[in-house]
Length: 164
Image 1: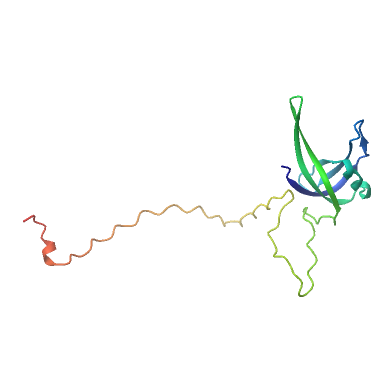
Image 2 (image 1 turned 90 degrees about the vertical axis):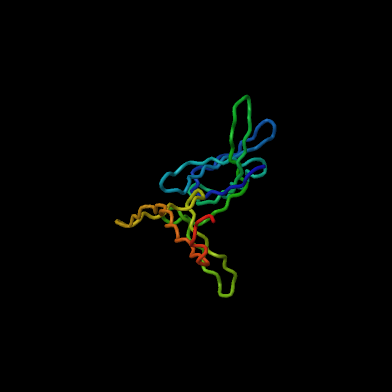
């Protein structure tokens, strides 16, 4: 079962179509990840009839790539491919790597519930640091409650503790 993922970034390279003797065709797209802290060059393979999707993509375009992760074994070695199957041009990301907010919905139109922001790579952003002097040590477990007083006897006979 192949899982589907998405990634946005700036196009660094669009390769030429490679045709093999078997008739198999592939084309490579290299995208620079939009994480400003640790940018990475990510290579995607577009195969067979999907190679022509890249005809309208140019170096420098900001795109969202939809892809599957594929793995296989060959001669005792394992290989992993990122197989792209859709590329969409999108607006350039805002500073900090976040895409720009969507345009407001028309009055009376359906507007989805806003969700917490997600950092590039699909992870939530780290929590903001606490203000100076705002550190509160974790609470320790409280001591066991003091035992309650024994219940009052129902009658005077109960006060006598003699066995006879």
